[in-house]
Image (cartoon, rainbow, N blue to C red):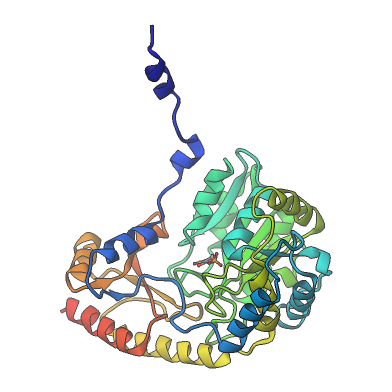
Length: 377
Ligand code: PLP
């Protein structure tokens, strides 16, 4: 007969779902970084500038005014009104404020979107390379992530996409401008994608967290041409408030209602004082920062293009670069030189590229490109 403690030990502490999830590869790099002294860190996905003072002042004001309590699950009405105008003017998405949901940042929006639409064994198509959370959120919802390779320049491969769609496909997730590639989907590409989604009755989740970081084209939101879209935006990257945790999404009514139920018992609401500050942030012009990032992008491309093979990033603040030689040896050589980059297999089923973030000061970028160039003969 089993003794008491043996019987207890037979019960696993964690769920199968949690067990199946992977530790974020970017987090693993953070751990590697903690062992280095003053690393040249190109692994982190957040801007190097601070939140503009005028927005910080609004947050402080809100705290002092006692705006520290719960607000409606879907967010403060004043903020949603501002977002409604922004969506109309900037994204060409016309919605009522009831279809706008303020979330605990982009991750909160993704979590609610996945939980609202996916059932066990539903399939969700993810274009490879992809942002790390997509696969894990599918697993958490017991859905099946289906990876579809993109072309060499990261544009959509419609042949592969059509082959991947089955009766179980419920949704497609896309990210433009893209992390880790910096690729920006064209209007033509998205129009073709929408036609496929219409034919197969699929939902699109469009992650547009980097919509402001766009250097050569105009950002196009697929939600402006396809109603069954969950369009996700946020302030984390655009206003450099990754720690404030405010984002938002817009979606058809049924999805908003489902997300409201889920949020009532999970997030409850996004942080109130920071929602208040975001009323100011929506209209705050961040162009000067984006112009600086364009310069960083140009510097990076010009510095590395002769020795490395990669697409010039058109948006976000990442470059996804082909390994010049054996991946493991290359990452170790970078670590030996105190340089942190992220291995591509964190964002892909293949390990052909590495990701660098150019959201760093010019000095760091100069040092990093010089090390990278010295690594290749
Ligand atoms: N979507 C993409 C593509 C991202 O790169 C990130 C963060 O790196 C997120 C969503 C999540 O952003 P947040 O910090 O607002 O949760």
